[in-house]
Image (cartoon, rainbow, N blue to C red; front, side):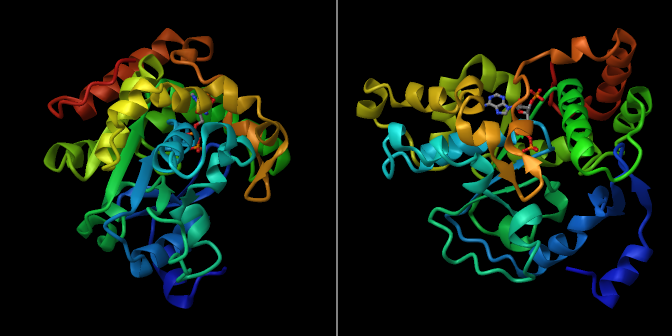
Length: 317
Ligand code: PAP
């Protein structure tokens, strides 16, 4: 959908930049908003009506969204489908948990979300400060996942390079230039430090509202995080479920190897253009060492020190 005159004049008043792959972005309410989601974002802010039972996954892109969608869907629907009949076996998790700004509000200003199965699960890459007021003011839950920004940067770069081959927006910047922009917060949905801090502070102020997870913890001890998520969304595992090994079964179903090897994720396509297999690359912690120099890691450490010191948020890079 094209922008209305009012939205067009708003866009003209905003600072604009291109992402590392040439994608046009504008600085809206403090973050780098890909211009193609400006209209969906404005519609979401205006029209979204949260329910107290809603659950929203939030993340910077490439922080573990696909994984967390699979886990949350499985946790919430564990009484609707036995593990061996899970919709995840035939459907990519992005089609089971819809993105608010990249799907729900892209075709309609005020889509009918009444029929989304309860509790409604949504995802977003938007920073906290631009979420619809209704979502903030309701009792709905937000589960946030963050990742070592060096791994996240490497993951995003690989994703954009693959996407670029199919549908180029423009010139892909060389690695060093893209990294410098990233460190300066210039990337889609960035600055990442502000993104992290927005949700981190909210999780400290209101731990019943925002659960803050780390990709690395989820990798190290998925069972413990699966239980934590279930408790947070008000659906704790019963003793019988735990004894029956359901927590482990859900973790296994949603593991990288299991999901990557499914036919749907090897051959399917997301949102008409992006191959599902692009969402499953390596799924490792610390892969950045194979792509970035120690100097780049040092630069990132300085950025994190400058931005995160005093917040209590520690990212182990
Ligand atoms: P999105 O924001 O575009 O949805 P997202 O799912 O957050 O992407 O990130 C993709 C990363 O998660 C990829 O990381 P990599 O490039 O470093 O490999 C992908 O491999 C990883 N990933 C996807 N599914 C899983 C999973 N089940 N377990 C662990 N990592 C996963």
